[in-house]
Each structure stands twice: as C-alpha cells, then as structure tokens.
Length: 481
Image (cartoon, rainbow, N blue to C red; front, side, top):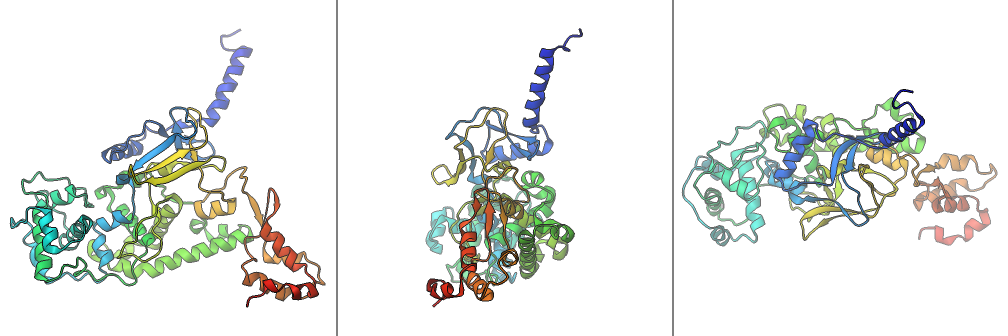
C-alpha cells in the first residue's frame, strides 16, 4: 500500500478539508492591506489580534490570530483613524461648507502675498487675547479655513510649496492638508505666520467673529452630504489623497438595491421592491438637491464639477457611508444642518462582517479616545470574527447592506395590504373604513410572519379587519380625536 493511502490518512484529509472550508485565506500579504497597515500605524494603530482574510460564504473579513474570550476587546481604533464630519471641516472643504458663495475678501487676497511674512505674534495665547477667541478649537478651525480659503490647496489647485511656513503650523495643530505635505522643517515658529495672517484678517475687519468672511451655504449641507462630498473628492484626488490606503480597500461597487438594475429590482418580493424603489428615489433626490452645493466647489478642481460629482460617484459614497459607518454621536456643527451627526467611517474595523448569532458592545471611549468593540461571544483561533449590525431581518439587511444572512433567526415574511384584503371573507363590511383606520395609526406596514408565528402588529391588524360592524363602532380608542 502506498504511503498516505490508508484509512487513517483519508480521515485526516477529510478533517483537514472540513477545516479549510471554514478557515479563511490570509490576505494580509496583499499590497493594499500592507499599505493600509502602514497608514494605520502612522495614525497610532497597530493590531496584533486580527488579520484580513477571505472566507467562504462571507467574502473578505477579519480573522483572529488567537482565541478570543468573552469580554475581550476585539479592536480599539484611535480617533485619528476615524473619518467624521470633523475631518471634513478641518480639510480644504471646510471653507466651502461654511461659505457657499466662494467670495474671497480683499483683505485675505492681500494677505496671500504675505504668507512668508515674519510679522509674528509668538504665542497662541496672545492670539486668543487679541482676537477674543473662546477656545483653541476656534483657532484650529480658523487655521483650516484660512488654509483652504486663501491658499486654495484642494485637489486641482496650485500646490503649497514645501518651504511654506504655514505647512508647519497646520501639521503641528493637526489641520488636514489634502496633498499630504509634511512639515518643512522651517525655523519659523509653527504658529507665527498663521497667527499673524489671522490677526490681520480679523483686526482689519474690526471683528472677532471667525465666520466674518464666510457666508454659510444655504441650506447648510447635512452631515451625510459632508461625508459623501469628502469621499468623492478624495477618491478623485487619487494618489494625492492621504486617505488613499483606506479608499483602496473600499468596495468598488455595492449590491444594495439602489445599485441594482431596474429589471433586477422588479424581481424582488413586493414589499421589498417598494422599499427598494423608495431608496432609489431618495438617493436620486439627494443627488439632485446637492448639485448646487457641488457647483460651489468648482474653484477646487480643474475639471468640470459635473464630471467629478456625478450621480454614480455620489451613489458610491452614499453606499459607503450607509453600509460601513459606525454609530458615533458628534456635537452639532454650526455650518451643517441640524440633522443628527452620528456616522463615522472606521478603517480596518469596517472589515468585520455581520452575524446575528454574536453579541458585541461597541462605542467610542471618551477616556481612551478610541472606538472600541468588545465581544460577548467566544471565537476560536483562525476563525472569522463577527460583529452584529443589529437584529435585522433579511429584507432590512439587503436594503441597507446589500446581503442576506443564512439561517437568520430574525428572518420573516412581510404581509402586504393586498394579501390581507385578498384572504378576508368577501362579505366583510366596512373594509375601506378599517383599512383607513390602520393607515391612520401606521398599522398597514411592517406586518410580518416570522419563525415564532405572526407578529403582534399583524395579529392586531387582523383582529381589527375581522371585527363586525357593531364591534367596530365600540372601538373608540382606534379613532383619532
């Protein structure tokens, strides 16, 4: 008998095959993940617990290098790695979000020639005293606005020279430059030039209001629009974008219904098909209502703005935020609309896939300034690490994330109004009135039949529809005052 041809060898090979079916294939060697790890390391994040891998059934995800125990931290991502509206406001887009008219004051234009000026106010507390700034954050925001507004360092505009002293100031204070310049090593104090320029702008204007030069875009862009605009702009910037390592690992396309062909959408079950068409209309309206704001960004680009901020590009950005963002409540931004600012993109962390069978605790830790995820479920070595996006049925998962979950305990069948009416007795009286009552009280949608039987909403709707005329009259609580 040949070596390895016996019964024991066959059993060993079967076990190995079954193990390989569930084990992921390491992808950390791929260039895009090598660059992402370097980029994250520069932002003070290194992970010794998880590695990127590809798994059968779920695709790309994160694999554990060691066994994970209950209560263990899966990942702790520093705030410096997160993409939030703060990131956008600090970027070259900040001034355009605050200013929709792109009017540059004459004072600021004159100061553009004085970038190398050595008229300085050496200490930032002197700036705060003279300009009556309420907090250092105002100073930082003013730096970002000045950099974008006066120097115009966005994609497609003239680059900053490496010897520009402002680069030192912006780098030290964490103000974002889209061209990825590093500090020049100039001996000029980092805050000198920007303090001098800002002082002259505000002093000559006889105003201590940092928004003096910036007429806000009306209506103010939403936090979602700010994030989407940044993603489209950075993707267009290509190699010039410091966010390129993250952008390179984002999906090139999505499978949400908004991205599917109309013929495919029409094949979906009726309740889901209706929601899918509503989603498509919502994104189309989102694009149409944002075109005016996009036009105000034209000075940042050499190409026509329509070719950059196309419907396809915005749809990709919308899907990126909708499918990958984590919940992180942010304080309101004065230059943004009052809608809740709760989305943050979390590079690397967003590679974690969904499973309805796991439990995790996820939140931003104010003490460590990191977004942390702790698992309440054990995970074996070299197994895929999951998180739970929420107790969603497959309709919701497909609509919001573009996939369905096999053996989903939250799976259910939606019952439409037409189905309800179709199978009720044809002699049922006052059917239109009953349907009207259900619609008035929002009981005509989200009627489901799950693993445990009909939902409470479905049972309530059926009970009302089966009431006799005399009983219906006595059900006063159903009627609106």
